[in-house]
Length: 129
Image (cartoon, rainbow, N blue to C red; front, side, top):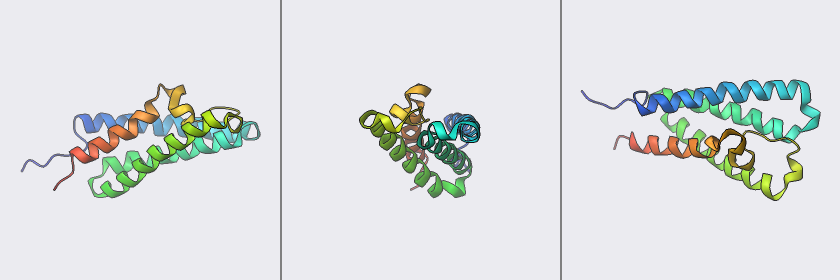
């Protein structure tokens, strides 16, 4: 019985990166919302949303029965990174402070832009026909 598991090898690394982003972006957003919300409400709210997305994606990727949820979450994540990235360049006044997804994740080494692409590729690779 050799069924590939999503949480082995590359999949385990992908889940670990999602977990790191879930913890770091959620913790940062919680602090920012609690102490500096009035300075950049949109950016900090978007960072909180990103943190929530990373939490859901981490859990969904780790559980084979949540594959559909992982797909929906990661597609939403990619759309969010692209939308916020475009807005942060075209309407920079909306982003007094950067969010996780601002400028396509520039402040995070563009990992927020690359991560959902890798997640979608992994889901495709591990899809059972």
